[in-house]
Image (tube, rainbow, N blue to C red; front, side, top):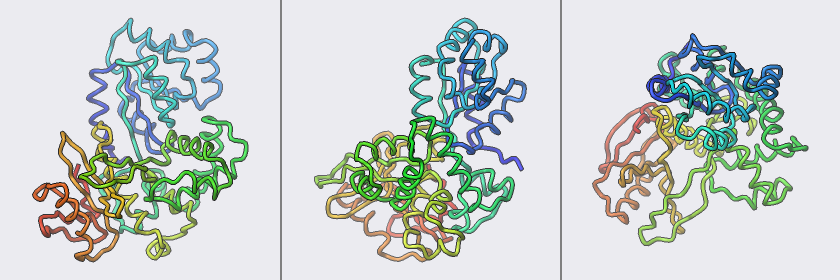
Length: 384
């Protein structure tokens, strides 16, 4: 079943203006399916194929000469040497939408692209399905969708998420981790990955992670960078505005997909998730990922932060847009109570933004407005 991706509109629009479109995101997020459906007449080449990759690296001019009208190059971070040759072709022909690149390692691809193709390429990010995309064809409860995650293949093939994520993690370790950095002890890295899952939605404490995993602080920092580069985790930065309060300056650790978190925490069904001690953190990660997708699917960068002062007052998400700040609280409970509003009310008071837009996204099903705060069901969190 082909579910139309929200990013399609932006890709088609940019392909009429820019000579190269690069779409980055985690493995299995649907990048290949998307570009093949949008550019049916372009040749498709995967650099996962060693023969193709060797040809491109050994004789790049001969390789690119076979595609005078352009092509789709999949997992192109495996042949970054091509970028400088692409630059010459683009500068000579100057035609929009010639080459479509995909990659699953953001930092590696971005570094090479900005060095060789600056001003010639539009970079977009594609994450797994958004709730909005999924709801066009599937109906799920909150625990069901948080447990399953939103990788397309699970829904397309009706796969058991427990089995699929176990295979996904092993393939990720063998392919991406070894490619980014030649880590000899992958079992130690997998332990580190599981420890990160146990800290989802919490402040990143590299020293604590390093001690518990038995590695150095420097190694922990390098491994976090690997997980970021391959779209497994992201670090939500604290907002800088202090409102005369001492504020926390460490980022918070999130995963792009909660199905992966559940797998790493050995949660085997949605019933276990409903009573799991970290359910609130996992729900928060789910909503944060949805908010990110709303930005990325429009071709926009993240403008999301969190805010926390030294006394423990916290806003889960601060949206910064054109100088205005919008606070969003995220609560997994299905019943609304007055405690849920305290942090937003406190933040509004100290910031002087009493009448500004604010949101509470929760695990229930009814939308309402209370004390000037928009209360939204998790199903209706499409607000950015």
